[in-house]
Length: 174
Image (cartoon, rainbow, N blue to C red; front, side):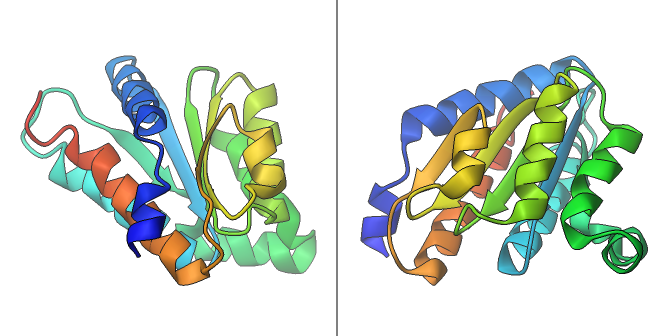
């Protein structure tokens, strides 16, 4: 586990915190997405943003975990293609200046990669949390916080730590 924690690039986390700060200050949206365990981490991050560090504050985060819209995700999976659901949902809601954040241990989840490509084309910032070699998602994102260890569980643990770093950077400050 310590190897995974040591693999977290703190300068990149600071950059991501600044992007979160700028996105919140501008009243823009943060869209977060993941699959499997990363979907759970994405949902947890959004909960922390919209409740823990927004409750009773003037400045609030506007955030959405894209995979939480189960009916929409299954409709795209069944009627179109699983890989299109995230990008298509972004086309409905995202605007220039928003932030898209995707989490993938392998970095090769096509729905998340297409989401990053779509978000960038729409004028959104793109942030990825990846593992191993970063995969195609890491290459597609403007900022890739990569945990370069082989064990998927340790990658996901480190991603969860990064998400707490991102959200709780705002717990003590307005």
